[in-house]
Image (cartoon, rainbow, N blue to C red; front, top):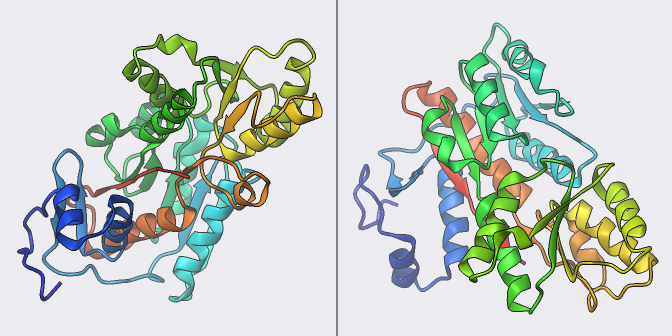
Length: 329
């Protein structure tokens, strides 16, 4: 950065200009920017771009206890996030406590307050609920927090440092691919209300293709994850299966769909295409490997930790927001 042609405090050129200047792909550039953000060298400004900071934010890991809050540790993505965050803090010998709140949003604000404690511990929260539940939580939970969520339009109104998860863009990419492959009867599979931005992004892909967004129906599960998806597929496939493509709310759901459909005698891929979301390790191990949208736990952990360090170094002050893009795999 000392040899950089860009002035500290100024906005960097657009992603397209930077990619052309340095001869790299856009996904590679985004990973580089995410690394710079994690080290406190670059700040993401939603709707404006990226700003080069005056000086690196100092790593003060270990000053405060660190707690990660997730809704469901049986979800492989959350387990991967907890592991990645622990590794990110390991060099500073800072232990990371992990709490599972199991979608009990009504007591979440009080739990965060308790975990901060009198010494002002760092709390990182991955929020899986709806817009309404997030706004309700924010109204009851003032103070410092690193929040990971997919609702970009709420970023300006939330009083926290935030990692925005591009679930909308990822859902749009996945369903656009299914449409390009000629699939017309697509269902989004998940628990009721699960991954609303991924579903909304999928419907946006249908609109862009000139199709009715309601073509992407919601197939609700009675049980979460792999088991719920497997059970639903074997139950639905007893009669003629009405869909030629499924968009899983996450990879665990998508893998359960694949197993259930094959158990029922359908060809996957072939008769039914299945996509997931997250790119958990199991998505690469099955054959054929699962088409999915990658939001790597390692990158998310690095961004969240970078915000936590900035919070400790600079205090509350200016709110910091960074973005984790999805990448179709």
